[in-house]
Each structure stands twice: as C-alpha cells, then as structure tokens.
Length: 498
Image (cartoon, rainbow, N blue to C red):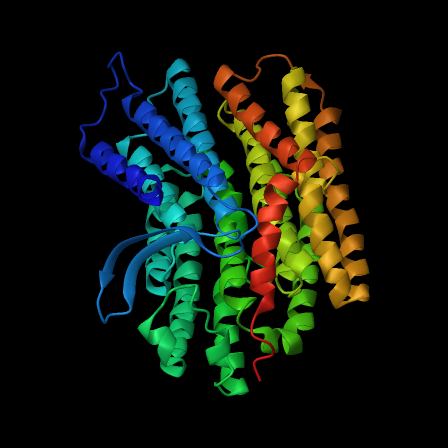
C-alpha cells in the first residue's frame, strides 16, 4: 500500500518528463495536468485506505513494508506509519491533490487570457517527484533512507522555484538551497555521531529501535553536542528565529500552483524534532528545554509583530508561519503528552489553514492583480468571503476549527512545563489575532471588485480545504486520538539520559 502511494507519483512523473512537450496550438493542452491530477487522486485514495486500516489506539509503527534489505550494511528500504507520520502522510496526499487541481486552474486561466501556458512537463514531473519524496520522508522507517529523501527533497523544490517561481524566484531558490544544504551538514554530523557512539544504531537504523537507551551510555557533554546538531538542522527547516532568513522569499516566490504547499514543507522540520529529539534527548530537554521553548515563544512574538507590519498579503502569511511554527516548536519540547499531541495536530492544522490562505491570495495573483493590502480588493463573492473567514478563524485558533484544537493542547501541555511561559504564549496569540484581523479589515476597507469571481476549480479547492478544517475542528478525536497514542510513546523516552 505504501509502495503504491510513494512510487506511483515517481513513475508517472518520469513518464511525463520523457513525453514530448504539448504544442501551444494543440486542441488538448491538459494532458500532463490531467495525468498529475489522476495520480494525486489515486495517491490520496491510497492514503485514505491506509487511514482506515490504521489502529488509532496503537502508538507504534503499523502498515510496515520491507522493500529491500542490504545485509550487513545497516540500510533497509523499510517504510511504515505511526500516529506521528500518518496525519502528515494523509495531509500530504490531500494537499498535493489540491495543488494539482489549482495548477490546472492556473493553466486554464492563462490560456483563456491569451498567454502561452508556462506550466511545462518539467513542472508537472517535478510536482509528482516532490510528492513522492515528501511521502517517503514521512513514511521512512530507516535513518539512512530518511536522510537520503530529506536531501532529495531539495532538488524538485529548487527546480520548481528557479524555473516556475515569481519575480524573485532565483534569489529565493539560491537562498533556500544554501540554508537547507548547510543545515543538512549538521544532520549528517549528528547521524555520524550516533553511529559512532551507539553501535546498535549503526547496525540497525530502524526508528523502532530507539536509541534513547544507548544514549545513556554516552557522556552527557556529547549528548548535548548531538542534540545541538539535530536542533540546528530542524530549526532551519521549520523555521524558528533566528534561522528564518530564507522563509520570506521562499514562502512568497514559489510557483503559484504550489504556493499552497509552503506550509506543508515546514512540517519536515517539526516532524524531525518529534521523531528524533523529543523521544531520545529527555535529559538534554530537561536541562535546556526551557531555553529553547523560550526561543520558540520569542519566535512567535517576532513573527506576529513583523506580520502586523507587512503590506503584502503573501508576506503576512509568511511571517504568520514563523509565528505559528514558534508555538509548534515549543509544544514539541514540552516532553508532555498533551503538548506533543497538540504539536502533531497542529502539524496538520497549520498546513491546511496556510494552504487556504495561499489559495485566496493566489486567486488574485493569477488574474494579474496585486496582493498589496493598500489596494487589494476581494471579489463580490459570498463563497470567497466564507472561505476567507474560515481561513482566518483557523489561523487565529477559533473554536470549531482545527487551529483551536492544536493550539489549546500545546498551551495545556506547556502549562505543565512553565506557567509564566504559558501566559506569555497566550498573550502572544493576541498579536496573532491582531495581524489577521488587520488583514481582513484592509481587504474590506478597499471595497469589492465586481470584475471577477472564483472559478469552478477554485470553488472545489476552497470547499475541500474548508471542509477539512471544520471537520477536524468539530471532530478532533478523529485525529487527536491517533496522535495521543503516539504521543505517549514519544514522551515515554528512557528516562533522563545522564
């Protein structure tokens, strides 16, 4: 089942890549787009089927598939899902389906406006390659496979941004490449240290073979160093202040059809923290946890303040992501069942709300309209207003949306760690409400634009995202119970690693 989900986009992407480019004067110009949509739909169906077979009350890995074993090399092509990766696996399949649909909408609008389509076969192939890699990262059950896919993720992202991004796409691609490449060096050093100091990890890299017990045999100073290498690698990918310099350009210059995936890609960093740091470095977290939690809350405050000052809709979303990821990072380090559960839920919640906001702003951009808040006008569409409101409510954390579930659980878990930090985090959420309400007010103050409205495909994308946000908000147990079972395993650890 996992093999179908991971390999199907890869195979179809290769087929599209080696096909001839569609002629501009051809009657049928959506061959590659329809192939990509069919592929992402099939992958989503497989992900849903995997969810139905997933036992939510069992916190460890399920649906395990061993593709190939290299005897004596410590490298096994093994994939599996647990309560930490299953929500991200499902949301990845869902959001790539939305991205493919919206990219088709972009192509149709460009063709209708008389301009030549810019989404070539390289775009659709790279999009499918990217889906295959991201699904593989979340399902990887082996250290080496995880690291290889983590590195491969960089290639299609840079290709998409460099070739199909917006005005400053080359600067954004270069900055993202440099930051990601350097952060990967820290992760490689951390993995090398683990292999050197914990021989059993060197022989068997399976995630289930936790290295928390082996770390107890490592001098605490070395534990701190390994922890720092891991944390730097993941903080860059999330990102959290001060490792966020790549975020504004990358988060706003991606191709219009894939902007909605920007929030999802940040989850590779938070997933890494939950997978490697929280369950294995309880001793270091006990000593340094408050420092890094404070860093996360400061990142919340900084991101909210900068977002409030922005005049571009896209940059408001970019810095709001910095703020939200700060709280998510704090939740991962509470080493508390509720905080970790909230972080797992918020991994999905922020991805959905971020995607909905980016679709809203991209609807303006694809029609050659500005996203400058000084003159940006919403269309005269009740449907648009409802979707915009739901996106804002989820970003703010209003009850009834998935954003509320994740934030509440993280703050509740944080209260067990430190009440002063919890109060500071809650007060920071007020700033989040302020910049989102300012965004809404700016849009309404400029009046309505009667010249356009959402297309049929855009309505489908908005409906699917709004339904997911409200469904998880009204029925949080569907996601939270699975997350809580794994959170118990993640936070159990092996005691303090001194």
